Amino acid sequence: MEHLPGIDWAFAARTARGLVPPGPELDAAAIAAVVAELRDAAARATGHVAEVTLLDTPAPADVLVIDRATWVDAVCESARTMLADFSDPVTDSPLGVAQARSLGAQAGGVFALVSTRILGQFDPFVAAPRLLLVAPNVVAVEQQMRVRPADFRLWVCLHEETHRFQFGQAPWLRSHLLGLFGELLAGDELRFGWPDAGRPAGIRDLIINPAQREAFDQVTAVMSLMEGHADVMMDRVGSRVVPTYASIRTAFEARRDQRGWGAWARRLIGFDLKREQYRDGAEFCRQVIDAAGVDTLNRAFEAPGLLPTLTEIHDPQLWLHRI
Image (cartoon, rainbow, N blue to C red):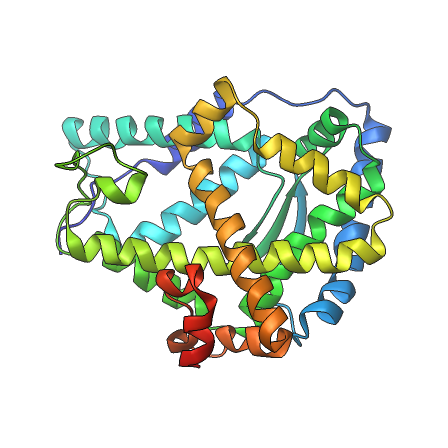
């Protein structure tokens, strides 16, 4: 398999940190209060998620409340770890250094843009898994949506804690995802081209190699299950433990569907694909729960062969029939 060219991840992080705005202005006391409340919300969310998911154990993880620049450092570390087996080392030649920094600058630009939007992230790909809560973004969104901060912070933590339970229930999931990423890159550098007929509906239609397109479908199916499952469980428990849950959900969906420059930026960096994963995965989970209960849905986390395919994500009855 041909490897990807080496990327200077330290340069990517420096580039992103130089581009990232600091976020809402808060004094030291307010910052300390936000950090404390997010930590408390994460701790409370664990029990709520265990109850509603019927999953036993969250994956071990440090809960870190961080700023945007620290998230940039974290995501660069995670990306370096994920791509280590698929990337060439950065050479000391002037050309190699220039190429690695050019790619690092591109990655840094994307991460800088994402860093202003992401609220939380469970990262299982580093040596010490961690749950990251990006405090400036949580504050910025709750101010924008004019929702009750304590409720919104718990609501966010319910989603991210669900990811911890997914990886705790399926310890093989990390290596399975890395394997799928490897298949996506196998044989040659991932290449794109314009389809022969019509306008592409999304990134998938631009992938030339059929095997890589199949790997992309498998990654999409797994991510749809994980994001949809987290969204559904967040809502099932949120409606009971978050007093202003209904108004938060309404405001958040309106924010996800915003038009204008923000919509263009979301398409550019793949947030529209993630939006589809939330929607399609959530509908799959709801239909499975309605037909056969939460315990049946949890079978998807028992083994790689029980994960739904992308076709089954869009037709849950096929998955129910297969298992």
